[in-house]
Length: 305
Figure 1 (cartoon, rainbow, N blue to C red):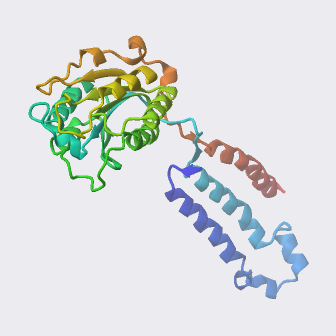
Figure 2: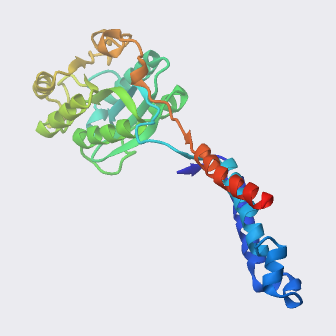
């Protein structure tokens, strides 16, 4: 329950307090000290002064409360974007390797900016991860915030070393749910570090919720020994989850055509009325006004007696 015009509520409260004040013994009609009570009640048509005041003040209080516009809303009355994109970027130490030109991290930044160019009028957000994951730019229509943060991505922003894409995808799921996006596309940008069964489970969970995950690889296998690079694991992850997998070439360029960024989800289905639930506050003032009718009748009957 919410009041759309709460200032009128204070007037209602003042009227109620005013009635309580006049009802106090200190404000009783001084005629009661001079005229017998039975005679005074007859002269006042059987009504005491506080009782005479009660109905008009009650009526005014209810009318003021009605003007405050009490309103309710249902749990389903939520505005939702039809589609939104979320870039999940790996900024772990292995992303600084230069087996692609100029290095994996720079190639990833360029690809993220290219994805922003295709986002058009859709909300776009950014999550970064290493040993932990953080939301850097919430999904928003203004791409300038996204572009600014992508341009500043570098290793060391996250103090926790390592590579945990599962944690990042779980965070992505939470952000999508909180943003009320119906169909999200998640772009997992990685060098395969940390990929495993838990990563597949996280992508599968997103898929069950109606969201799509694409995997973008950065690396060429010419890195130092022990560096994060396992294209076989990435291919297995793609097959297991049904995700589209694309990899950067030696110059760090990624062919975005297989991702079909210019196509809408669901084969380009148009927006239907059921896709968006507009917030609808339902004013309840009419119920209060209906309650005023018997009070009007009581006042009318009292005056004609």
